[in-house]
Image 1 (cartoon, rainbow, N blue to C red):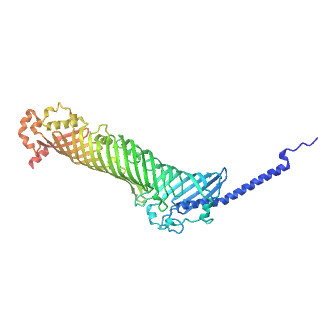
Image 2: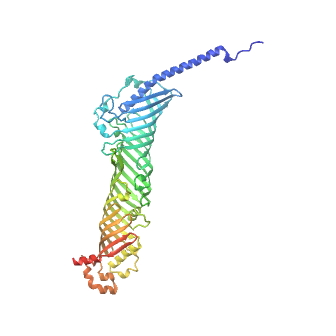
Length: 557
């Protein structure tokens, strides 16, 4: 039988051709690998040089690798950028060896369209594990005056100009996950401010220009999420902390419980501009459930504010805050400053809270709004219009806010009506008898008699002290001094009541006629009757009385 032809894959020439092709591919792959390995140091040096030129600083990169699978893939690890003073030939102050920027890893991809003299276009550079540690301003003030002009160290492989002519990069955007920003401060006794940045995107990246950014970060206190967009730069080589920063922010779900003694979920929007170290912020806040945790009554609090913020430690100067609590309007300005302390046996300072010092002007408000905020009871002591000017101070301490709150100021109450029927009844009776109309006490609605109050006050340790309280109703004027306990509503006041009518007219009827001869003993300083009085008990169960012992003492004197 005739021999059948061999399958084509068993023919000798096919075997030789296949082997040659595989060998050629292997050789090509080897050449590509060799080329990549030789290209990597060159590209690594170009990247380092570009960063050095950008930051005018010493730069280190531990490793850099590329591959040619579906374009050019590049990956670098262990990038460190020092502050501008730490370049070749420039002295560095002792203890200032911390890199300005640390980066665990970066990577990017670009199509293979390289042309000599043309930049390599990179659409996105991904950054992982970015840490920025901004030195205090004093570091840049005390470094060598020529540091900003010091040239960055060159790589030995090629001079800068030749390297830049051969390879340059054009980056569209930079995206970063898991960044950490630490702002050091040169102020003694202050801790640095630290921000955790969940996501950061930079666009409009051009040498020497401002970049656009979009960032999501966690605010340390109160804890909440901030979304910000704006522009950053140009980068200030002499002092990066002076690099311009502008933008708009949205602050959501900020839990005020991180400040001891208060609670509520705050949201805020606004605009800021300035530098990394010093920002001017204009914004507004909404807290629909603001409350003092010790009392628990929630009130709606809204504010509009203008503030100066120290970006290195978070200290804030309010200039001013325009606020509304319930139906009450007030304006405050002052400072919110973080306070540090050291414990026995430990020299490392730690934050113990914020010291709040404000000048407050309550110009159009209702007293029941403030009493409701600081009361356990659903029923507050009184209602009425109130005006207050006071210095407010809340020092940091473990006690609740109402126990730490210190006030020193002046107040005026108008159209006051007491919610206690007993107290309002006594006020109405005082007014009618003081006018000489005792017969109208039973027929007059007590709620129709409105009072006025004014005086100076101080508050500390949960107690309101009133050294000079003036209380007036039609027909009577009462001058008191004493204290009111915020916690239990305790009343402890002494003073005197001056009534327009004489004693006989106050009593009225035939009894008044009988005692008319003693009228002259109670007249004093133009008043028809002057009586020493006291008010004791609680806001729910007040007790009024005439101090006859004090009257006898006065007669003896």
